[in-house]
Image 1: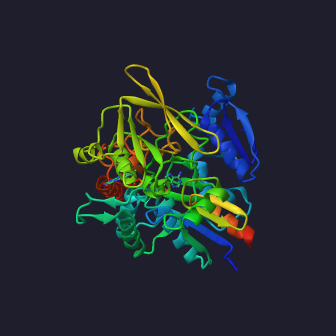
Image 2: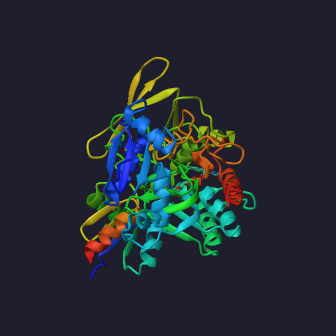
Image 3: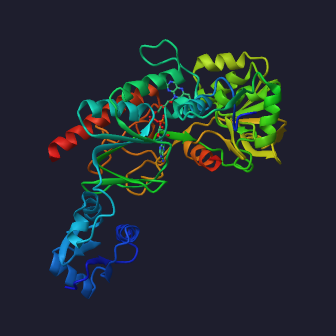
Length: 397
Length: 80
Ligand SMILES: Cc1cc2nc3c(=O)[nH]c(=O)nc-3n(C[C@H](O)[C@H](O)[C@H](O)COP(=O)(O)OP(=O)(O)OC[C@H]3O[C@@H](n4cnc5c(N)ncnc54)[C@H](O)[C@@H]3O)c2cc1C
């Protein structure tokens, strides 16, 4: 066997081989590579020496250490640098018992449970509260007949902070490495955190219309938060796209402010009857059900919305200054889609105990395939994911 | 003298509140405008940002539409 300090047996088109390479490059560690596609003589040589045909295989000073996940684990514990006889570039990394990704209702609820189980917990999130920031009142959370969403978030946050949990906020997650006994999460600012388990609670983001003009005019008349932006449309003619609860709530936010509201929905209204009733009785709302929004018109600001009748094909231009897009959410699962199983909507599949199928990786809330996207559901699922992570660590240690 | 940081918001916007809380936390002085009550501020907001969306945060010459901590931090750093 060769005696390079770090040797990788690899082949083209193997994602973990590439991960291992870029990991070592990132750490400025030199390596030599042996191309060993299955069946080749190099592969035979590797199989005989290491007793496995799985790629990549990493060998340090002649000692086989395993695949990419093992490499990450060795690095996190500082062991890699000891083996190489070089000084570690930083103090030994802290390895958390659990890293919770996302501080919406699901992630915050999970944190309460992990902390109370004395698990060393880290929360990483862009913001606190998640989708609750997009709405004004919550009427269906047990114990509160009506509560301002911002206040509910504050209560959640205080509850979690009373345990002094470590949080990293205001940064987006750039990549994750979920295989192996130590998982890592790297943020956009380049910092990496390590955990024995990961709970994914990244929730959902706005579903986009994906029609011409939408992206160009976002924030310039195309709006995704009616609670925030409705007051900017006093006396204006506006359109709301979406016939579900959030669409009709947006329409109702706008009814007292705008001069006229056009409600455009691909389907019949699917919102709760209580909303449908209110909207249909509002004098300044025109319903376009079974119509499709096809183009946002405007140069610097929105000047109109083109809509098309699904039955007749007729196209009309609504002379609106604002287009509120409320066609639901899509899961924030982009980072996980290659490593975890998802359904056609991109929601992460979980079993009854919030397990994802990858050992030590759990998911909860709106990012999962669990139906009914509600705060109370997310909170319950968060608790389950935390207890599952706890059980997983108990059986491993 | 007017403050170097301005924030335009609506009373119902949670992100606006988060942005103000964040500036408070950092001890940054700012002028806050409620654009639902102050039409001049609304016109000014549209002019400087080209946007019809809140919050709009002006830090020195930087105009930020929406609240993103990283972006606010960078702009504050640039301001010195
Ligand atoms: C307009 C509206 C009104 C609603 N009204 C109600 C209601 O009245 N009652 C009710 O029960 N439910 C309501 N819901 C649904 C409810 O808000 C959600 O079910 C709930 O917020 C889901 O919680 P979650 O923690 O799974 O995800 P989210 O709330 O989406 O939180 C996800 C968290 O992950 C973070 N995150 C995501 N990706 C990344 C990344 N790459 N890097 C860093 N951080 C990331 C986000 O910043 C966020 O903090 C409403 C939703 C909307 C949109």
